[in-house]
Amino acid sequence: MIPIEKVEAIVARHDVLEKELSSGKIDPKNYAKKSKEYSDLGGVVKYARDYLNFKKEKKEIEKMINDKNNDKDMVAFAEKELILLEEKKDKHENKLKIFLLPKDSDDQKNAIVEIRAGTGGLEATLFCSDLFRMYEKVCSKKKWKIEIINISKSEAGGYKEVIFLVSGNNIYSYLKYESGVHRVQRVPTTETQGRVHTSAATVAVLPEVEEVDIKINESDLRIDVFRAGGPGGQSVNTTDSAVRITHLPSGVVVSQQDEKSQHKNKAKALKILRARVYEAEKLKKDKERSSERKSQIGTGDRSERIRTYNFPQGRVTDHRINLTLHKLDEFLNGEIHQEMNEGLRLKEQDLQIKNLK
Image (cartoon, rainbow, N blue to C red):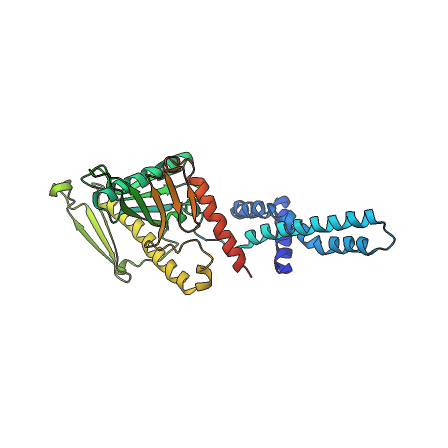
């Protein structure tokens, strides 16, 4: 059961906002924020009102059932109505529970995605590039913008590492489920015996954070500049444009050398550093709230194996929800990625609802 005062608060807040917005006297600075809140409440206020009326309706139907003056047909009709009312109440209660679930404050943020080749040598770097192309296609379908921050290529033409920023609406709420170890099973192009090899890549999804989200003191940073180098030791720049920033309290280190400008490399490095330090602090707080951790799909831990891409069998399996899709090509093309994501979201909602007090 949901505490009745929480349901009453939804209705009361909706009514207050309705009056404020229709009065025309609201502060323009707060108009957009309050309009969004009113819109969000509008999606559940009907369920809240019905939920509050449930006891009254149930009492009236039970009165009909227990009235000895009513014939059998009337009693049977009332009994069916009571069953329907109970079912309706359960559905409304579920919708209200989902609405009342604690919101992740980072869900509306953009996301920084880091993909790194893991075990498997050159084959792992090819898989790393496959994952990047998959995310490119997902973002293209959703009309999200991608900005490459850093790419490190391998001899095989794959990526040792690729870091990119995804911008749009509610990016982190979608991509956060991609954090973890992605495993691939397939026959590498270099394999002459036709044996299936297993390789892996690690994906980390961090919310893009601004200076207002986390305070990093200049005195806590050590900034080193050096000359950028390319493959084989070739110089790609004749000036000290590359930047390495170390956050001394946490030990987080970020290097950036993609740009010819030292200023641009420093700005990119700081963006990544802020996100990593913010993530580290957030994970620390989450671990301290063990009950909350149990209500999350995955821990955000980069060492957690979350998904397997099996090419011989043409399937992709997400181990967190035991969901297997036998449409690997479509998944890698970003066509059914949404289906997997929705499964993860629903599972997390179910876990959170069970823990809602």
